[in-house]
Image (cartoon, rainbow, N blue to C red; front, side, top):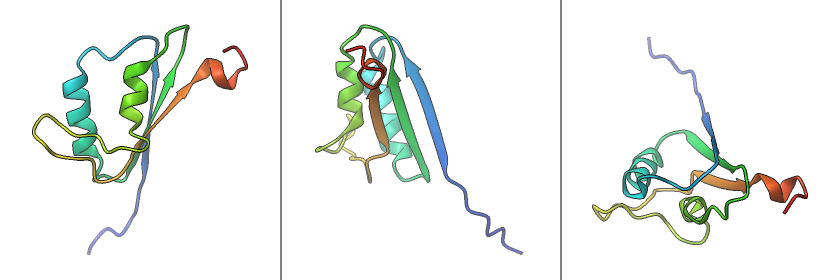
Length: 87
């Protein structure tokens, strides 16, 4: 008997700095873009979070070094200070 249970995962990552290895991170997001999941990146602290905005992929698909593109946009970046009225 086939298990017909469906699931959808949401990965929430709190970040207080920039991405250490952008290449590996982009590759992981490209690979995960085919899975039933979303990634929510929340920037906390005073940084500008340029790398996290790039990973968000709004308006452009992420492309890995191997030339593969995301199948769909699974990343959303939120700058915490902007929603708390602190920015």
